[in-house]
Length: 316
Image (cartoon, rainbow, N blue to C red; front, side):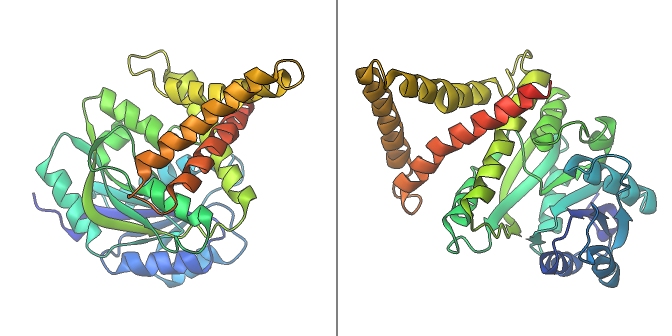
């Protein structure tokens, strides 16, 4: 069966995205009119703007916590109820625009590969030159092609296995996409990234605190996933959590304590960080601008992730 506009729907989630949401919806309307916008308590008129642009709007009730997982699940349920012929659902974050040729390309890949449950394409940062934090996002988006362990928020899902898996786990506040991908892979499905342009993201991140908050959230996601599935054969998120604990927590703490009694140990730990910085920088030299600056942020990232791990454990 060839993909048509009748078997593809798009679910957009957002909260107070303003002009970025309008740009997102306009980009989607170039290739689809089957659009559901799920709003998480916006106060900037986003639901009304979405309605003017032809989207079916679903406002999340305030009786339960808002989350991306909940928003996508409810959007999926509404889309498949309104359009029962939908076989593929594309999720888009409200701060992203969609390439007009992506829906056809993504759906064609799913048609050709029945064992693929999720397909993603190239995600770019709109203004990587605007700040170091935007540039870091752009590097993060530029992953390898082919089979993947997980995907991000922007992705096209085959509707049947998504529904059979129960969608995203609404109890997972961060990292809900990789967690669902793990469950889909356990059912024998594949997650694939192809080389077609898919979305352009507008992080609009200009302050260190914004980047730090996002990095802490990553640590929380790793820890949550490890607690849920870490004992499985995949050792899901165990390595990432341990990395945050060792490089972001234990080594800095030991270096600080040793400074007052064993300064040579502190110098040794600092040397380890210097070697790590050098390795990251050399590995990315020629691929990205200012690779050693990137390495420095990756070291800071471990510290932020450790904070996220501690927050995760404190809530257990």
